[in-house]
Length: 115
Image 1 (tube, helix red, strand yellow):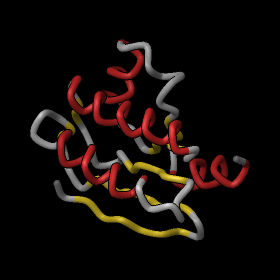
Image 2 (cartoon, helix red, strand yellow):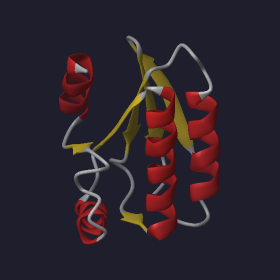
Image 3 (cartoon, one colour):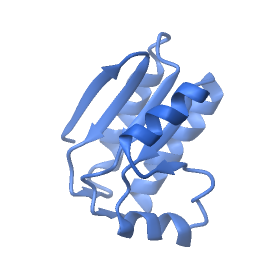
Image 4 (spheres, one colour):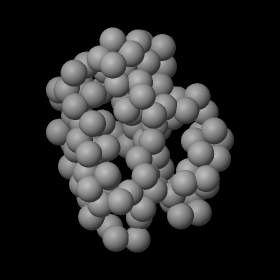
């Protein structure tokens, strides 16, 4: 999986540098999310989906895995930048209210600072 991890203030921003979030990428994303979540200093994680043009059920499963693990550890987990195709999949799967996506990084950062 091609990604970039940035620390912005006290927030971990995981930038996916992939066009597809599918069964080939999902296991690596789960592993990376576990690494992030096992760092006790991190209690806020944002996943940047702005470069992801396609996601399948495996990709959504990886994001849901991150959300579940985050909740168990008391970590805030949100997304930003999901493109139309990915947003449509979230809506079809009735996950739009569960996997919170913000339109921009600035919106996501602002939301994180309120939590």
